[in-house]
Each structure stands twice: as C-alpha cells, then as structure tokens.
Length: 157
Image (cartoon, rainbow, N blue to C red):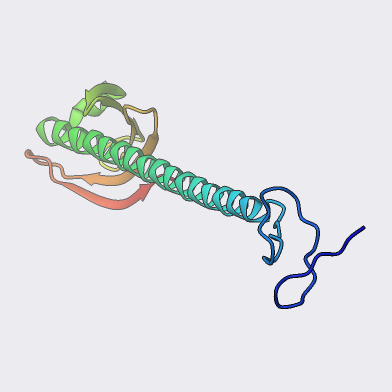
C-alpha cells in the first residue's frame, strides 16, 4: 500500500467517494433531539388536558350551585304562596298540601299542626331535579287580614 502525501508533507488518509479530505467526520446524535421534542410535546399535551379537565369540573360545580339556588328559590316561592293563601283565609290550611309549577320546576307545600301555630313546609324542585326544603314555624293572627309571624325558619334541614 502506498501512502500519499500532501504538498505540506502530511499524509492523506483513505476516504470514501464524495468525502472531503481534511474535514472532521460528522457526529450523529442518534435522534435524541427528536425524542426530546416528542417528550416535550407530550408533556405539554398532558398539561393542557389536565387544565381542560379542571375547567370542566369547575363548570359542573357552578351549574350544580345554580340548580340548587333555583330549587331553594322555588321552595321559598312555595312558602310565600302559602303565606298569601293564609293571609286571605286562615282556614285554607285544611286545603294543604298543594303543588304548583314555578320557574320550570315545582313546589309542594304541606302544613303540620293547627291554627294559630302551624308548621309550613315547602319543598321546591328545580328543572334539573335538585330539591330544597324550607320550613317555617308560624303564628297566625286572629283577625283578617291574618298577620303571619315567623317564629322559626329552617332551610334544608
């Protein structure tokens, strides 16, 4: 085998066709940059999905609070309806229980006990089937218009 020399006296190494003489060989990173990029993209995708899940849960909690408030407002409307009926005619308590539609839901009002100290219970149901209960211990006046005094008011007990 013959060794060739350059003009400056350094030996020429054997090289493949197309390879430049005198350049350092290229170092391959074996695709590690691609793996790191894929890992970072997967990590960001997981982070975004987690944030979306949290937002979805928060929206559902907010909806549940709205439906519960709707049920409570419906139950309070039932209690007010009962008070209005009693103010007109205190003997109407014998007509309890009654059920009415209200605000795309409904309420049912019952009376326990007798005059002048009945216990009125109103159960409101929202359009999404959430239920709230309002109970009032009242004292009804003896003269028309019948004045109603709320002695005790309990919500969702």
